[in-house]
Image 1 (cartoon, one colour):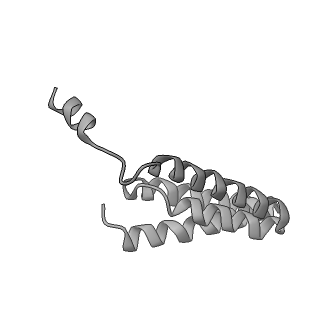
Image 2 (tube, helix red, strand yellow):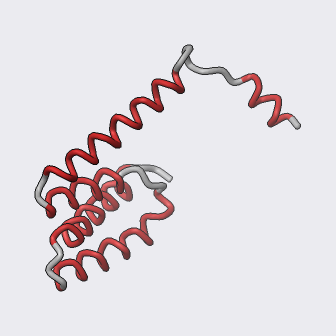
Amino acid sequence: MSEAKDAKKRKEPFPGAYYLAGAITIGLMLLFLFLGASLPPGVAGFLVAFVLGLTVDPKYVPLLLFAAIFSALMGFLGREPQVAWGGVGLLLSQLVVARFVKA
């Protein structure tokens, strides 16, 4: 019951903060959509996977490292540059998360 009271007492940092956060999120999504469509496949795969990989919870790093290695291997073996470089980007981002983000 106290959790419900705490939720009611919390306020926005400033009026319209949640709307601003939503607008920023949608803007970033559109930016990544534009970049992914305009860049070469390998660069786009790397960029998108690297940046999205930085947003994960550190407790999922081991699983995502496995997924990154698997996708990089399969991408290079199958000559799919977007998948291959996306796996490399995900691998590097998970190493950054494991090293610098405290769980």
